[in-house]
Length: 356
Image 1 (tube, rainbow, N blue to C red):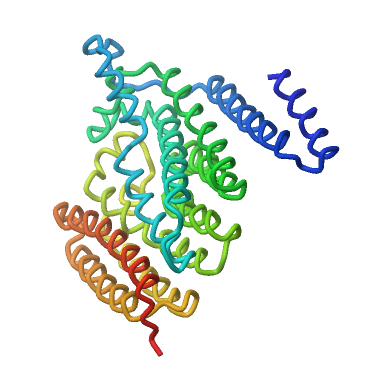
Image 2: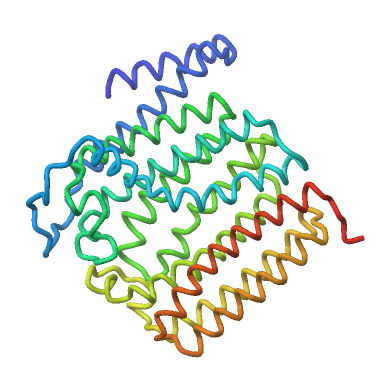
């Protein structure tokens, strides 16, 4: 650690003398990423989590090589990564007002996958005590002892460091910094603090999942523009209805793990009411992209129709908040909504059919 600090200081001085020569900038960024990873490793390793009350600490079986590979892949939460990337490419198309270079899109997708995977792996390390107590998550690699906790932590930090360096070198430093900020926010603010302390955990913590649109926009333009901020807000207001619907279905799990999700703390009726309110806000925010980015008829029709269907599902849940089936239907539709809305963003940018 001390050696890394000394090297970082030396490279910083060389950057000043050489006027930011690429010969020293790239190593400076790489060492900075390594320092970040080492700091996270030391901090998390020293943190004592409460032990699981019900999990047995005897492995169910000795995993083979293929089992281990699958377990490490599972640590990255591939389905969540897919959902994050759904917002990335359409945002790049909008920023470019066309198809960006294949190399740039591939770099952003690869870097984003590495960053999200690293954050998710560290999240599983931190939440391993909670996952032990929830039926929905007991099958994850750490509760079933398919991966050693320290191995999961090293894996997550390694992916995060590689993601930062990869994005900084192949895309730009701003995109790399934004991706790293999302990882840090997700781990330290959401996972380690908000999730365990407040029913507003997903409202505030959900901001981490909004950052990929900023990364994508910065990759194309080198800055964060107003349309990117509106898209950030779209994902921000989409997140609570999406996760609260799932939390309604698994309310008992969260209660057993002592996680203060809104359905546990405020009840099903209040959660359903909040879902309706956030859905209305989501629809309103989605329409702000029309003036902010000069969107056309394709996006307008998609935003209105998809939003109306979202609200209809939310109102259906509001009518019977205890209906677990309605909650799951809303949860699944929310994924469809986000996918189709961002697809409409890309199509509208390509067709360019203005409203007037």
